[in-house]
Length: 387
Picture 1 (cartoon, rainbow, N blue to C red):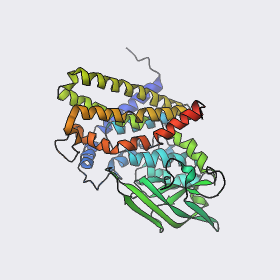
Picture 2: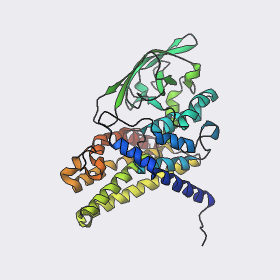
Picture 3: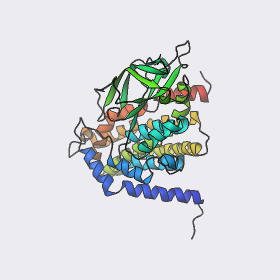
Picture 4: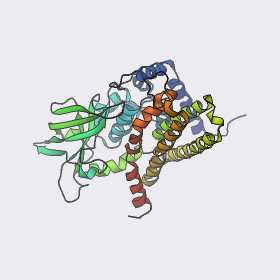
């Protein structure tokens, strides 16, 4: 009996199975065991498995071949992201380097910028970070104060960025700075590629409850040239709004939520609580909501693959999926009781310590890739015309 699925769908399923086998392999299992054993002040950075993915062209499969990808599409990129998160592989470096900085360069970078940065990022040999958030400019990037002052044929950057991740490991950062002052805050923002090992860049940790640290980055007079500008001068705000929606499919958030819920369900089965109607009904409801979120996220991927991104629907998908973490965590704690507060550093921790870790990480799910409040604002204004 032959399959009635279109050839493209069969090819994507074959690709998924290959990627899934890779993430189930011994190399990945050893990496995850090492990461799980990290002390509280250690965190994952340039993992060897990123280079293994890069060797296969899987780290950025949707990038052109000449820049280290496979020339595939948004669906294959989503498959890698989904399987990575389902396997529990730390994905922050992938999101920052590939999904954000790399895609900005693919879409808006010069040929020189692409050839200088993309192949090394796609091979997993270099990493990138983003410098958007500031002490007085969180979700509202139009309020940013980092400035780029004219200096002959270039600029000198001055400012402070905060709550960014992996900058202590990254080679370069996509940095938003103000190049023109005016009455409208959205105008006059420019995106720069900032080498993070430059004199004048100071990076220090910001205390938090997360396993992975946030950073404070002080930029004091670093000189950049026209070759470091991504896109057009003063046009950064519109680029951010146009390109960041490419990150908001919800696939990565769904993968993390699904992995956590599956662990909780397995624990409920092992402890006999899965047959208790109180818990069973709750878990079935959570499972149904995640399945709905999965369908929504993959519709966003299909929109990208068809070159028809929908900013409002993307905001809906990101909001809906990331908001599932709180009820999932609540259900997990009700099922586990006091044991749910044990961390991954405790050998008796249930669900691999993910309950405790996600309670500390929980707020970040609602903040990353645009806060839940901003997503609702986009839906209300651009979608429903309420404001």
